[in-house]
Image (cartoon, rainbow, N blue to C red; front, side):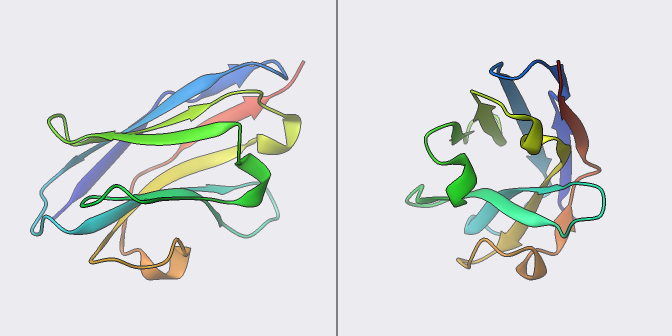
Length: 123
């Protein structure tokens, strides 16, 4: 069973940066998508960014394009989310998740989830 462990969250001032990490283990297939999702209080969980294990294709939601970068280190089975120019509206619990195969960056398609890490952007 795949296990996902997030790290790197915290408190940062507006305009600052954070890098989230998602360490994965227990894969049963080499073809998968890992995504970063976030959920703010009172809001639905939204897909922030996703990356495929094969060709490395990526997806970003419009609100983070140009500010966030997703990357992967296959040797370490780790996916990163570099977040720059953070805004208060980026405040949320960030989760990484995995779906086998190649699919859309939609939360309903992902079956394996990490425990989440809190990101707070505030002065």
